[in-house]
Length: 233
Length: 98
Image 1 (spheres, rainbow over the protein chains, first blue to last red):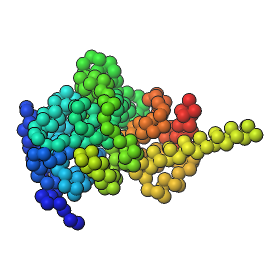
Image 2: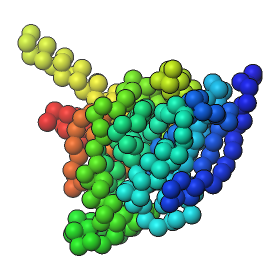
Image 3: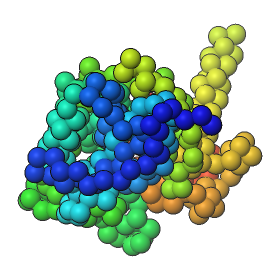
Image 4: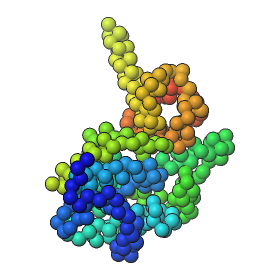
């Protein structure tokens, strides 16, 4: 397969932006001022892990088109050194700082699922299968915990969330600690209606974010990359 | 005639719902074509399909809500709901019918 000049499949770096140090995977040509850069805003909680391969495949597809991409792991997600419970405010601040640090580049934020809720409203943004209301993510976590509770205890135990969050406590749900602050932030989070979500392409992507063993979706990745290229041109 | 017509419409809606439930199951559980096509009303789901674990159940419910524009109360979710493809489809049909 022919590769565009400067093609580099993979570079893993630790980048300092503002007060944050972020592990970042970059793919494609090393960009210079004026050239496009696609920045990923990854899904939240378990969906991030399930979308890892799709994200990598989109990055490879962008690289094959001669477009650099950067995929930062935001604080308290993915491979970030800070493993404390996810904090939406910190994640938003870190993404903002990362975007601000990409000086003189033509930026497009490509979000997957709940990542859309972290993106500043004035950034060029392509949202893939976005979560439009953050409370849907909480519902997913609570349901998963509930089904697990029922299986484990025969329905005798139920994880109480509402009163514990109201009391300022953190609650362990489906493998993740959800603080009262994050529960409040997610409950209030709404996708900006002006975001360029592409419903047509979303309908053609297998919902890998829900699959225990996510399928490989290279064709979907190529379609998403082509759409990103069109948005950048 | 009108009764027949109404019945026909009802069948169409039922077929559509069954098709959507089958598609959601296929997509969320990443079922192969043969398994997806072989699902009948009596096909056992929870405990029989290895792909359907507790995390998948939660994902299935949310995906059904999103695609069929329904709301499923968590109190409605019990072991019987996912007993068979028929029980799940009947539940969703009732939800769609309001």
